[in-house]
Length: 86
Image (tube, rainbow, N blue to C red; front, side, top):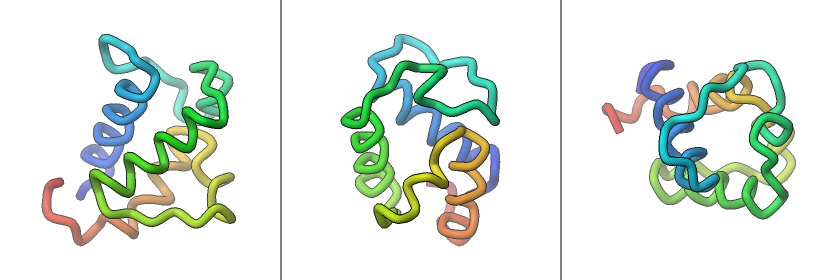
């Protein structure tokens, strides 16, 4: 997957978990929790959806690397780089 495809995939998961009607407009470097008022269960739902939709295992020790949209994309890039257009 390309960086843009990963970004779109993450935004789709966030939209679904947060119950939004459309893709959120986010500042890529600001914490997702602050921008979307996500609680810890919402965050875990995002992690579970990444695993379910894209077969990405995120160990709990790596959760801080998923704080912002940009850091999440950077974290996922090497893990999804070989995945064909998911």
